[in-house]
Image 1 (cartoon, each protein chain N blue to C red):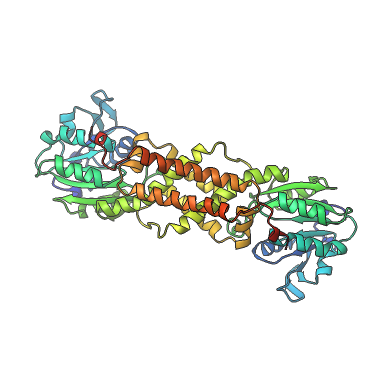
Image 2: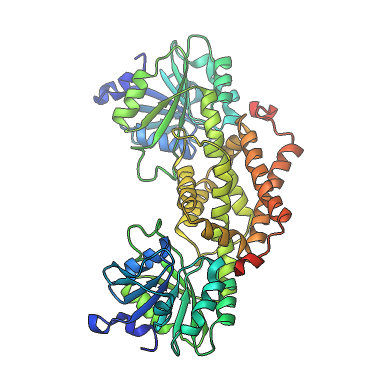
Length: 267
Length: 267
């Protein structure tokens, strides 16, 4: 097989081999949703070689790296080490994809570390075990084609077979938007977690939505939170902008000497 | 009639008279949901006397204030003026309720301005035209009994007939919790509105919840936003705490010299 199009083949005998690195929360989500469409060879230091679940077998680093399609579901901070370790074992024209929450840094690492014959596509599924607990159909995935591959066949598989909405863009454009969407959500969750107990009964529908959003990311793996906050080169500017506006609002309170019982309240 | 219990009477001939002050977004919501259970006499400077909708008739200040039950759906900043103007016209043992988003200030005003024979209950429906656009059943309302009334009969009507969840508490306990729930929602909406365009495609389920929450309160009347931010004596402390934590996070970025490409990312 030479690209993602054969992933959609329905005949078990011809199911493509996919090497999966990492069997954390997201690696398991990938295995769950791809097992019906591929034979998955997963490598994770915590797994003993052997059957893991139907369609998924744990194997050595070399065994997983030798597959024609390789998915890296490892923390962004591990990406360089993993890329280096698999580089010698990738078959000619293998397709390598990561699934990290940021894209500039992994794209840079993969293009630098993987041999020239390897095709590379950086991806970011915009969902996780929490938001996709009722299924992944209808969710979105970002594709950043980096080297030697058209996104068409893989995009078609993700759209038609998995029901995902596919967004094709560049690592920089991804990280700019993600710095806002994910960066602000994590920042807000961080602030709320430090504010102490929240009111349970006297609340509103809108505040319930904010708390639900915070709860969704508070369950993220620490590596994911770290990548979103510190491994996206645009995240810091967004965080500083948010904090600067918050600071101006607090200062404006002071400057105007806002009292809870101002005279004009009794007009 | 002497309390809210007769509100639940099903016979049109015996429907109680309710005076409603204010026919803004929330006054209209009240009229819509009470019209089947009361004969409503509404007073609003913008309404010409006469029929408004089935069960609702616009009338003079004296006509609305002369009802045995009076609901004040006016901005908190107008509460003192309205309370003074209706005080001479309230019938003996009238029940007066406000529906403001804060409770300490209106409670103080009503107890000071209304004659001693009048019974007073401060309320805060924890919903609005946005969140209750599909109905009010299942939503919550806070009751703060202030003078000469037990919340029981009114609470029973709100629970059984309107399907609301009723929370009985004090104005101070209400404002402490509301400073967190409503205060933080409005602060966040304010900050987001100043941050400029938000990403539309590269987003997440959790960020979509935050944006939905902000959109819900960005449509609130300016008077409501003002009351939540500045007429709740606990709101400022919550806002300052939020901004202080945000500031510490920004400082921590600086102190640790966080780089988007730290050395340890290449472990």
